[in-house]
Image 1: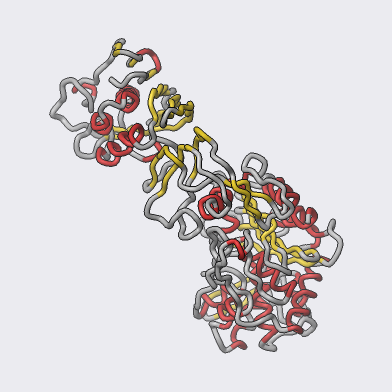
Image 2 (image 1 turned 120 degrees about the vertical axis):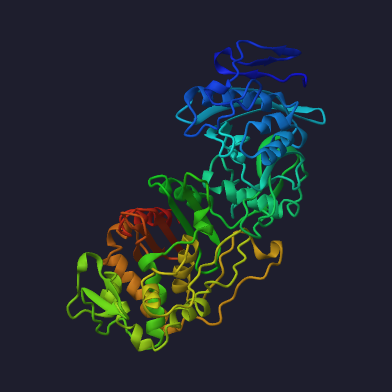
Length: 550
């Protein structure tokens, strides 16, 4: 028995104490009760069906006791339905993470799920600190044995673990950083929770360049999915416990603490909300915030249909080809059929004798769909998106980001792209950049740290937005903010302002996603709220709050 190991099992069923083993009323599941993964007699009969309450309770207790003991990882793994993976994880708990003295206390089961808390100590090279967290396990019936077994998942060991990650304690691979905004204000995950994954990535990628010194930490190490530092799709290395702090190096970002604070507050009002803000004149990201249960940085990594905010790109293409003009007539019927696919406007509205500006400002879908034949090129929109707005050009923001996707499509699929549906995939940073390009006339790839930090190659669009096209587009966005679908959200803002709303229908959702983008002077922002409804209802106020702070 490893010295200092303890297990506390509710009800005194199984107790391991420091310096020895004490058994109190330890109940072995007999063959009559369905078989045990521990000791005792076994029935030859293979039981089926969900495990019973007693089986769930005892299996959970046996596994937790063996895990906390730490002496025999193979024994602990035998209580699971994936002994190989479980054995490595349990062994690594002490060998790689240097976690000892675990006291694991299960709570009352809810069905087959058993919650538990862990109180342990991390000890490394003379340094020790307590580590506490909560997790849960699920007991299932073994497919071939019929025994009750812990349904193995990495989250059993720690709730933040994934299939390709493990707990590690040692000298941190990169020094800590003190991230600051453009004016030198410190940015911390405690004050700006949405920045937690951003700060982790910045540290992984630029910690050594910032000039700090590594300390001793316990972290989650991810293997085989990118490098965790912005190259690939893996999560960055996540520090769970700091035994010695080391020395932080200062890293200047393009963020603005005041705008970031406003963004943090704005997204809190809606579940599954994201927002990003960019300076049109420079491409600098001044705020990025999310309110998500999973902690995913959807503002920069999300990939969803952006709805009618995509009409900014579509309008630019139609204006550039001379197929539309801001003051020229544009048909806006209730519905339109294109190559067998029917498209309609919200609540089947129509506009009689209206202009292209009116169709844009009121977000008329059919006015845009009707013009697709006139382009004589199903791939005109992907070309415009790439060549003028820089979408899909492998952005190097400084951390991991998705740079938008408008793949070539045909027929009804191409028509759906005109209104931001179908195969178009964007996040709010992409749409904020589209608005920034419209405002400035030139695509400037978004960045979150200065390019000079690592001399990375930024994406460059092939051509600028033609002057006359850009002017008409900006005027149409101004009209949208003045009297169109963006009026309510933008009403409290002054200065030069413009907007575009979007509602994106998603399969399986009763309510559409809310999208909104706008500019005010030299700041562009975009937001999305999953199942938020109309663009101006949820995403609109988020964008307005961020623009007001800027």
